[in-house]
Length: 496
Image (tube, rainbow, N blue to C red):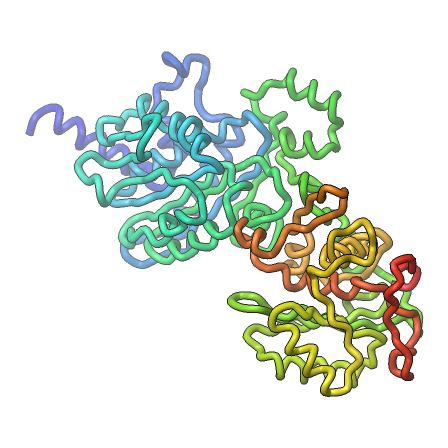
C-alpha cells in the first residue's frame, strides 16, 4: 500500500470518530485561524449549541445500520446575518464524511438563493475541508447542483433541488435504508407546504434527518407550524436573535431598532428571529385569533343560535358544521366529515336543528352544496343558501365570501370565544387578501391557497359563514318569523 493510500485510510478512521460528534467534525475538518479563517477559532456559540444538541440526538437513537430509527428533526428561525448558510454547509459535509451511501436533498426558497448562497457556501467549505479530495462538487451558474463521493456518484450524494410543487417527487423517499437520508431546507418560510408533506414520506428508512432554517417571514405555513404550531412537538426548535451572534452587524441592527422599533414586525423577523404578528397579505392576524381562544364571554339567553355549513366538494376537503350562540363559537361544538354524501349531511344538519333550534341556518350552496340545501328544504328546515361568489351586501367587499370573513374579523376584534384547535388557527390565519379596482376586499381563492401548498380552509369557512349576514337576537326563527336580516345597514355585532 502506498504512503498516500495509508494516509487516506488513517484519515477515514479519524473522520469515523465524528459519527456522533458534528461539532468535533467541524473543529477538525477546517483550518481554523489560518487563511480565510484567520481570526476565527471555530463556530459561533449558537452553532456550537446546535451541533452539540445534534450529537446528543444521534447518540440517543443509536442507529445500527439496518433498523430504522426515529427521524432527527431540527427547525431554526433566526434574524439576519447569523451564519446559517455556513452551518448548512457544515451539516452537509459532516453527513457526507461520516455516513457512506447517504443521500440528501437541499432546497431554498428560490433557485437563485439555492445557487448563489447555499451552494456557494457549500463550495467554500468544501474547498477548505480536509476531505475535499473524496468528493466532487457540481454547481456552476447553469445546470444541476450536486455533491457526491467521487467513487460512488449514484449512491453517496446530495442534490440541490428547486422547491416548486411540480418538483415534489425529488423530495420523496431517498432509499438510503442502511445509511442516512437527509433533507435541508434553507429559507424554509417560503418553501411550499406540499414539499414538507412529501418529505415526510422519505423519513421511514435508516437514520433520517431534517434541518430547516429561515427568517420567520410568515406566521402561517409549515415552517411556522413546525416551530410554534401543531407539529412543534416533533422538532428540536430554536430561535436565534441576531444581537446574540458575534459576527452580525451591530451598528445596522441599532439603526433598525431606532427606525422601526424593537416591537415592530420588521425587527422581530430580521433581528429577533420571531414570527411577525401579521404577514403583509394576511387577512386575520394570529394574535387576534390567539386572544379569542377560550375567551370568557357573556351569552344572553336570547342570543341567536346560528348553524353554518361548509360543504366539501372533492378530495381532501371536509364538510364542516359549525354551531354558534352569540359570541360563543366554542361551547356548542363543530363537526367535521370527510367523504360524507349530501343526503347524510343534510340529515345530520336536521338532527342538530331539532336539538338546538337555530335562528338561522347558513349553507354553502356552491357546487354539491346545492344538493344539501335542496334536501334540507325538503325536510322542512328554514335554510339560507349562500353562494360564496355572489355579490356582497356590504359595499367594502367583492363577494359574500370576503364579506363573511370580514365580518368574522370584526367579530374577533370585539371578542368571540374560539376553541383551542390548531387546525382552526391555521385556517383563520392562512387566508391572504387584496383589493379590486373599486377598492373592495377580495380574498384569495381556495385554488390559489392550494397552489401555495395549503389545504382548503374548511373550518375557517364554516365559522366565517356564521357571520355572513346579521341574525335577529331572538328565537323568532322557530316561531314562524324569518331570523335572517338581509339589510346591509344592520350592525351584525350588536348581537353577534
